[in-house]
Length: 422
Image 1: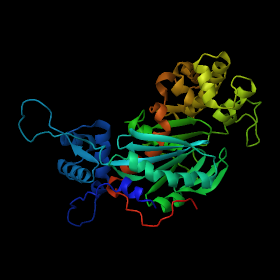
Image 2 (image 1 turned 180 degrees about the vertical axis):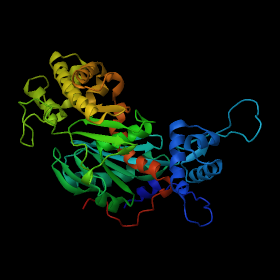
Image 3 (image 1 turned 90 degrees about the horizontal axis):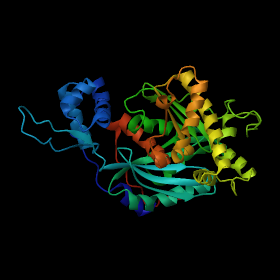
Image 4 (image 1 turned 60 degrees about the vertical axis):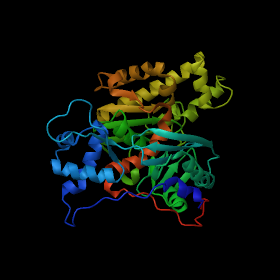
């Protein structure tokens, strides 16, 4: 392994926490740090007294857990509020510390890989996109070759807590395996094992709809909410469902497969062999292909279609309006079946051409029995053009916020570790 990896994620030694005397941990000891860190992320900067009210923990427990989290570099104390001194102990606010640690994100799309550094507040510090040809060895080999120099240049002195690898299709996050990604032609690819062996960093592999749902719960439209549905419409179409603040995974992480719901054009044949599947109607691949066949764009490239629609081309605008209406029918079904507090749509049209969103809202209103206010219940992604980078980083950050006391800065890679995909 290149020495650049050592430079990238071992910038400073791990911070140590003075632990209490050994005893059997109670529930507060296990769950308290998670509650405190989550409350600071949601409400911070916030004083310890307010944290006690927000979490239901005792002031002593809040002080202890706050000290532990500061020692791990997850929280920091800020200067006391300006103004005349008050009676009693000073109310020193604490906030999430974005300067010590970061997550590395790797989003694998059909034609390119997005590399990112994301801080603990979900902000993209740096990102870079590189094209690839789609083969397993090529893509994973590119990740292993590129990450050392990228992190050395962009981690900005932060310790890298892990690598989040996010892609579409069926992803078994427990096993770190891409079970099936039809457009890429990937089947049963052991992504975590390959990248963990090559980087000696923790690797979290996740489907992009679930990763985005995690990001929305932490930093976006789901903050302070417990029920959310994430609908992702790209080259692959899928969804994620969260309840009680937890993403539903299902057996082998198969929950949320909406690609083949019969909500599309009944005359369009899907790659699965059936007709009328949602993905066959709305995926970027399918829509760009139809636009090219109709002579709207010179090549089957969805970015060209977006650009042509942005210039006001009536054919391009019509195609994207139809796509949003089909997406709206899917959103209406998910709203009625799950009835979440909010449904988030991640879709390039919503990001680049938000003035077309009324098409989606009108379709939701026409087809949902429960939703009375589509513009409140259905919102575009919180992360705009950085959505893929944030999704990849969130695969790591979700684990940090759920289990902060398991935090360990990554070990230095052993000399001679191979940097090519197996």
